[in-house]
Image (cartoon, rainbow, N blue to C red; front, side, top):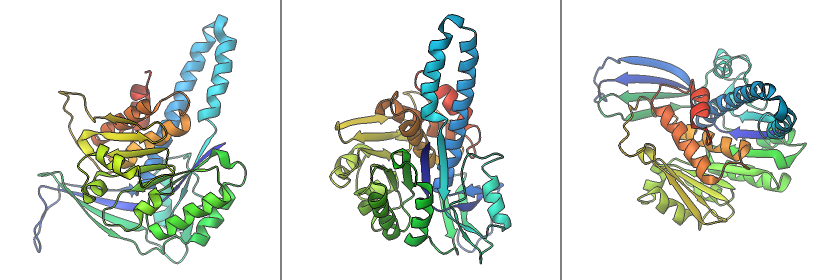
Amino acid sequence: MKKLVCVGACYVDTILDVPQYPGEDSKLRATNLQVRRGGNCPNTLQVLQQLLRGREREREQEQQQQQQQQQQQQQQQQQQEHDDGRGRDFKPYLISCLPSADAPATATIMGSFGPESLVDFSRCIFREDHQQPASSYIIRSEATGSRTLVNYNDLPEMTIAEFVVAVDEIGDDNEDNAWFHFEGRIPETTLQCIRHLRRSFPNARVSVEVEKPGREGLEDLAAEADVVFYSRSWAESKRYGSAQECLSAQSGVARKASLLCCTWGSDGASCLSLPSKKAVSRPATSPGQTISVVDTVGAGDTFIAGMLFGLLCHDDDWDTEKKVQFAVQLATCKVQRDGFDGLGSLGFGKLAPGK
């Protein structure tokens, strides 16, 4: 069974929509309030879970069509069985520091993935002396579209010893099918985690996010990863003028990587395959197309979900260009709606290459 293990913080986001950003020591009435679970890895897993379920529905429809085509039924069933090995046997895990296992906030976080969630939370690290989750307060300006974030996290961070215990239980059967994705928090600890994986599970794949500007040690993580996801804000902090420029320069840093990706807002994203030296860029919209941007929170997480879906479930039948196209269009769908609900049926049904 394929396993995707996502390692990162889980937040409860409080989002306030305001007419304009408030001045210091001022009073302003919000036009809308949302409270929802956030965090890079949980967001990615929420979208990925929908994609996996969308793929299941797609298979069910295909099976019904196969039953109506008697002459080709046996051949199609054999093909279906081959395909099932790529998607159905897939288990996503989250490793995150959470409040006490019996805290209401913990129940809310797990419940946010819906009933019968595909995500395994059993390897999360529960801080039994804490009742409150990591929290993020987001002020979203209707005038400019800007987002101002204030974070608070009283939960002790994960240690390398805790990570070792968690992953040794997950990856003890078939390391060839294991993929570990890191948010890139606390780079010093994350680097220790990656090096443990390289020693204990040398055939496992590792991806990392290089997102937050000014966070020291992120390039050290990129140097150890197989796949790296760069954010526009980080790239611009390094004075790169485009996604392509970022990837070209970083190819000399991430020497072990096979694929580098960089998102660039309305310009979409670019990916660079290091073995082939082939670069692929896809815009967020077609020429002349306009969209109504509703909510950009988690757009990058959605792109990563789309790429991981392609890399894990369609590594054989989608080339890099198709994977990037799918991930960019999925993220474009996301920014046109609040939250992440509905991306599985919309994204997979209409955007998957070949549809």
